[in-house]
Image 1 (tube, rainbow, N blue to C red):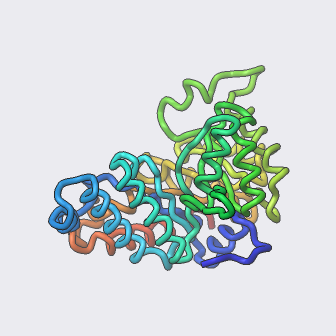
Image 2 (cartoon, rainbow, N blue to C red):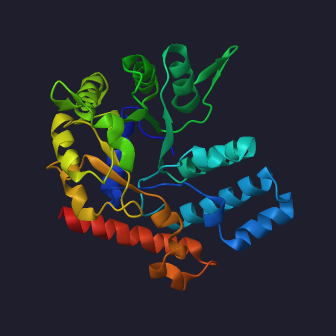
Length: 314
């Protein structure tokens, strides 16, 4: 589904969040052991126990989850590593997933966490959210709507993504404070009395100014749900940046931890859950659905997550 030419990516995402009353994103991060036996069996019958067989299994698994949840959610976030582990067939499953989700009207956040410099960074940006020129023609390679970017290499790594965002009406989420336990080894180091992640946040606000899209910028950020105190400080430093919040659910972030990530307007953040949704049928709470109805379990988990988050925000 296309969007109006005058509506940039973050506006498009916000519209969908408001329509569904759901500030959530489902992380399509398939591990083969999440995929129900019956789906694996069918894929292996067709393709053998091969990379192609694994890729077919994760594609069918994704499709089931998307079919069961797309009417409830504004966006999905496939993490490319979960596809790359299956080599080229895995990447083809990634691309199929991206295209299918876009057909269903979902905003697709490619969780690719790229961070390089100069022409390399430009090539990543072109390949994932831009268009590559081939002779007299141009093609969108992976064609996600938004991608995640690692800013460790500074502006040289981020600027090429911002340029492509402007050309193509796309967006980026820049890693500011990640949800993993050792994130502090670098991110919390003090620089002139301020933790490094605050300096990154100031930079994100600066980059965001040149890529505004209504009240918010097409340059957003990533802040883990596991650090709500930091979330509060960072929200103030980047009032116009949309925050992508990983770490809800399986990693221990709770709905009430998330309130500080949102602005007064009730917007400003989108919360990700991956295995808590896609592998819900393996959770005691949803076990009654069984393997066969894994997608219905995912749907129920989405309903519960939306209710949990909206409840904490009201």
